[in-house]
Image (cartoon, rainbow, N blue to C red; front, side, top):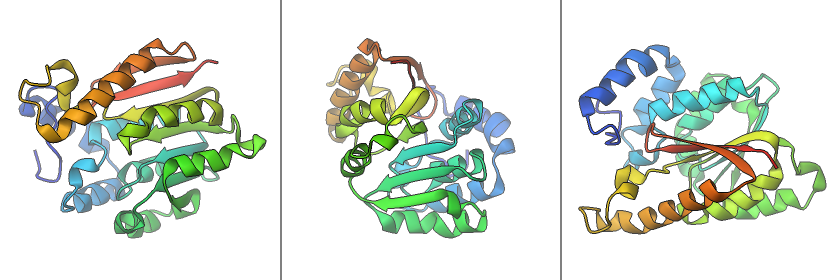
Length: 234
């Protein structure tokens, strides 16, 4: 497996994960997406990038749902953002929210070269502030087809309550990192690194609440670091 891909342990086999990437993901990966993934690999926080297999599924979900107006919470260098921009129609729009414009600008030249920057409205801000601002205008309720959430894990449930107003009935939103390196299924004292323990607790609680939420249909998928796909039904 190339050094530009973060190691993901959910399959408990690096060889099997490499097989998945080499046979199913990388042969279909657009050149501009490969370029931004490779560029991101040299970033000190490269582990924050969306895993390639999760990104491939994200792109398929966007196509399957005919998403046009989307939200992205957590942009980093723009890997998943570029996948989204390539997957939605020419007149589609992405409201992309992140506190770190500097990281976004690392991948921006590649996004511009791909000819999809016009689909992106990048907002440098805390996400809750932007979501609450959107909800001040009734026309925004139910106006989004799709949302991808990959930032600030402590606020995932607060995002969830707002997304249930912003995303239309029948619309889709996807949470990243919902298996937290596989630690959710291990006792906290069982080799869970100290820096992952809080995230593990928050993720376990999020997963419990999502499973109990009758307003959504869910599918918890073990790709990347785990993603939970939610379809709003109420």
